[in-house]
Image (cartoon, rainbow over all chains, first blue to last red; front, side, top):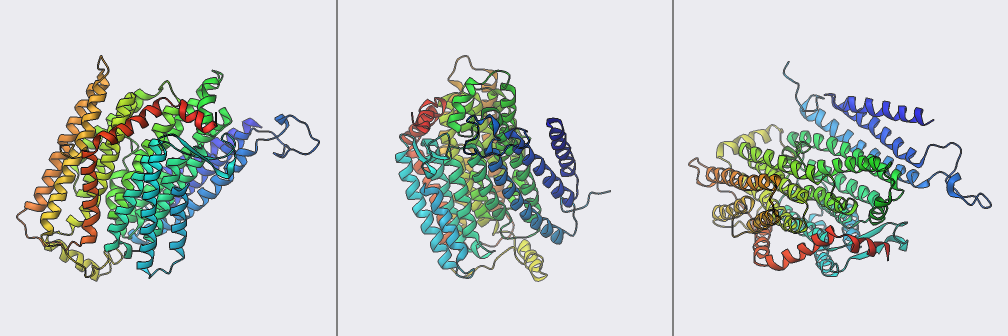
Length: 114
Length: 505
């Protein structure tokens, strides 16, 4: 389970970084989205990788906390998702404005000299 | 608590007001800022002993706390003063250049104050995002191609830095199991040595996020062009955003790593920034970039001194931080006025551009107002004051700050190679900014070419004059201010008081 999760995060982050370094604004924004997915998963699994364990202490359940997932990373990841969603939306608007004003989708606002 | 909630409430109120009622919006914004300054002054008095406010009354390691010590209170005051100066300046014309200027300023201040006051790592992230979102709006404010192009880079870089921030925070949480800064400081020494590398990796990733914000070389290449492209009041406000990175670094590094790991790296990185900024200042093609590189030079100086890691040096650095932030903010405001006196040819070009609708949103029409006579002389005088300040010559506090810095850096015997390098770079950076500003000043004020005398209104000159007067006062009152900041630095270097107060022991 740990291996699958880490590989998944790694692939997402790797693709994200590669796309982020591309010259087209659309590639950059997709790269940022992938990177933020990777980071969100990373935070989420900081609360340990264990299946089938709710972060809720049921009445009459075991007294030790070892049987429960850590609820805090789940709260953190919600905040992080909301914030990255909002900023990505903002970036999308700026991207469209830049496309309209400069007439190209190159990140520098002009094509490289061939 | 007040410094966070007040601007937030004001911003919410301003957003609700109809877009055309400028007077009402400005009135709400300015009264909120005046109240904020009053609250910040009260806070600096209260913060003689560290104050803790537990949100929702949850005790410290479990709930989120706001903590006000001397450093936080001083930074909140600095932010409020800059906010007032920028807002008053914007009354003349910038507030009409686009929608919701005042609301953005208030949101920015909410984020800044929250980030300065919070005692929780994740909460710091949330306030960072709040102020970044507002700063994206302000960077774009006024529209136009150069601004959109520069903002695109600014937003992408800061989003990536935020992701670094998240990775760092979650690594630290994963290792220690807490996010409260004071609690972290008590748990880190007790960590088993096997988990130590993971924690240090997390802290390093976190530091990258702060250093991007502060603009340390090579992470600060985006800064000059973004700040030069932003509208004048926005750029003046941005001069404190870089200092936020320095603040966060100072606070967390000294709290979490009491033995000072990584200080060497910080010192050399700061010096590299300073060297880069010296070259940039000399090569800057326009005044906006010149101011941007001066800003980088001041952050470089700060990082290097903090990295050398003695409490007196940190105190002097804090004084220099206050002085250089105010000075560079005044400079950004001044640049806009000075550049209005462009040669007639340039104005004609601008007019034709406007006729073809190329720059329609960029330059709002000037409206009638009281123009100052002899505005050129006044501008020249202010320009000279800013130049002296940035170069660090007497009688303005740039000199006091740099002198105290140099004295503190040279105090420990024997003097190491980093200290000598820093000293040489400090002197060089003063010389470089003097050359650059003198050259620009001569071209603008004494140049032979025909130029129009700019129409400057009282409302635009007043904030610059007020900032400069404040700086003069800062020189005269250098003793008490320096003492206050030295105490702040002492408290940072001996964080037991902070930790005990937060955890309620």
